[in-house]
Image (spheres, rainbow over the protein chains, first blue to last red):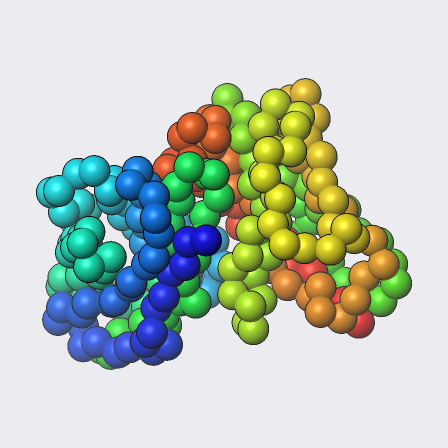
Length: 113
Length: 114
């Protein structure tokens, strides 16, 4: 079975600084997708960024980028120029052949003004 | 395009009762998945429906059931509610199971069991 591990429960970053959120996963599949989702206090789950396993190039979306290390099964999210609106819970997730999403426990990110 | 909608948004039920939650996917999406989110267990997969058929089921007791209608709207039902069923229930839609990498979530239904 696939597992996703987020070992840091909380992180804090100063506004305008950069922060990296860590995630590791375990799978025997070769074709899969990895995601970072943001869940603000409104509880709406928002897709931040997506990475296809067979693509070596790291995905980027504006201030958000990932460091995908397939051999190490590591998938970290870097948030540059952090903004107050980035404060939320962030979930790392995996989907493979069975199309269900497997989530990590999440990390609460706070942004200090 | 309208997003995924879930009704009701909030619900309070008593132990032993049953509850039905509804999810309307994005127009054109035919796959709907349900997830339970609790502080203790995090986000857990309940089940997935595509073309009115259940494709996948998570590790939940038989009290949790669901169905999908011909217009792709989905309902999930929980019978004989327990305190531990208090959770945020999220549904997500995608155009098909093969496009599970593009799952869009609804705002969730907050269920409180007293």
